[in-house]
Image (cartoon, rainbow, N blue to C red; front, side, top):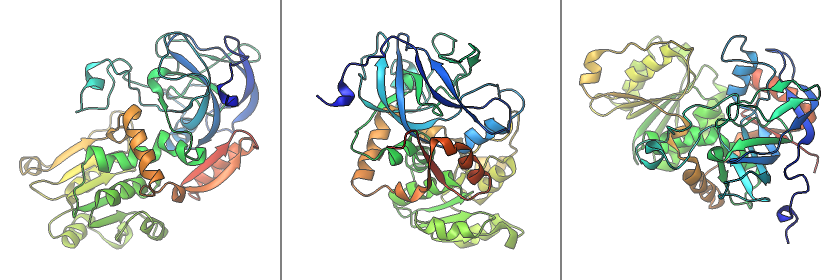
Length: 385
């Protein structure tokens, strides 16, 4: 029998383990021992193999006001092995390799059953607690409650996740690559593939070439886009982006009217535009760059709560559309497997996104690298194995 399939001696008991706890906004995470409660019905306790740092972690780490809350265990891009399951969990069993996602899929609500949406009515938003019970599974050694993050909390050796946020995967894929599909790469690739449905031979413009924007480029490349234009203030991103299919680059600093430049490059506007930063002004600019008649602008970045977009009404009447994309429009329990197979078939690039790999003890270094703009994805290994 595979060692991972052996019955768990810790089943039904609290586990004492290490976690990187965010106790104050913007301050280094504190690696300390915590207690992780056993899973309740519909919940899964996971041993994290590796995790990676996403800009959402960085944003909530720096945030001082609600929805920020402390102390908290951040992290939401990860892969792990099921240590134990609660009652009424039938999808996975002890020893299974799984990816937790902030995106839920209960499989029962109208949205989950529809092919038109990847939202989940039953669990519409990631929670600071377990979604069915409104309680945390984490406490520090003094008994203080530690809050969950995006229903995942992967900056810990063990975490508890609702089964609606768990996807079982093929264990053959390297964990350091599979964890990227937990959020960032899936979001970008899915936005081109599922949300926009980029057509072969089309033109694409991507505003913001961080890891999400580059993942959009990768998705557009896989869809057969003929021209993929990157827009970013950092010219170095063009060379990086060529690995993912970028054919052209626009530096906003060299142009007073980016929309006009892109319209001239594409003969009237890009077929698909993607905003990957989270700025309302950039959403409006991306929309201005897409072609009348059928142009589609997809928003992946998230601006401050309450931000509003103003669009020319004539552009709407002339057929230009604006839509959002959460987790790339993917349904985790079915679409992640498709991406894994495309990686195994050497179609989807994942290796190129990993620029740094570090040990769990060095997790604060990952924050420094992301703040300094020196990495796309930094993979953090929970053990030295």
